[in-house]
Image (cartoon, rainbow, N blue to C red; front, top):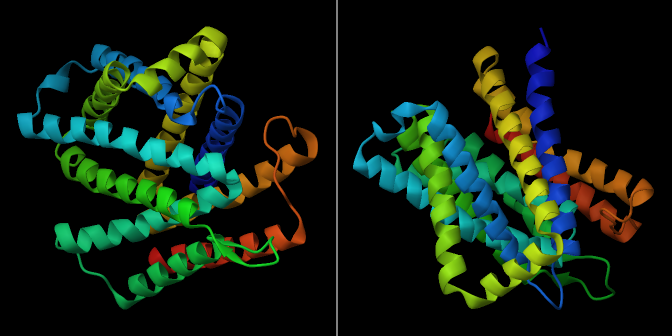
Length: 305
């Protein structure tokens, strides 16, 4: 039965919508008055709300060790750094170029698992990793100009985000495997909220930008962040459910179609709703992008074989 396939496929499409919302917020709520990095404080507020809700319905959140609590809070704090790099990448590049880079996360995960968890890397996994990074290199090149340019800032920002996400994933897996998903999520979201409070108190530029956005469009931005977080959680739950009824490798391969979903939604938005997201779909831009995505998808399939 292919029921698991459609369940697993719904997740990357939900995450793709979240990515488009992020691009919309970065485009419309950063500029001369504010920086997009201040948007992380809205994510922190969502983290505080999420940890409170989980804590109410999961009374055993305090029943884990002090070390596990510290590690999960660290993940939440570290996530803020990753989100900032992700938003910086969205500031300078189209969302359909940024998101395929996330296919490097499993590759980073395998490498981190090799060095820190004692996992082994097969030749197939090394081949898949190499193909994924080859696709990422293609995405880093600007073919739209007469002189081909390498997008150094994009590569730096998004690779740092992917590396942070991979490190967090390894730590979360290490801790959550011995505890429940919701208990681990409570402490991770709490760390996200704590880091937001710290940034608000000690980083004046972030605080000023955040207050400006609150005064002008606070309710809208916060509401959009809540909806995005809900869609992200639903996507995660759908993936976890699919994992119960299908092989792990197949589910993760389906999840790799997120860049394709982002490209599709970006095209539809450019065509019919350009005020939300508008991208350049000229041949010089779209052909290298599609080639890069195909390489990275092939690498992902090989990686999960």
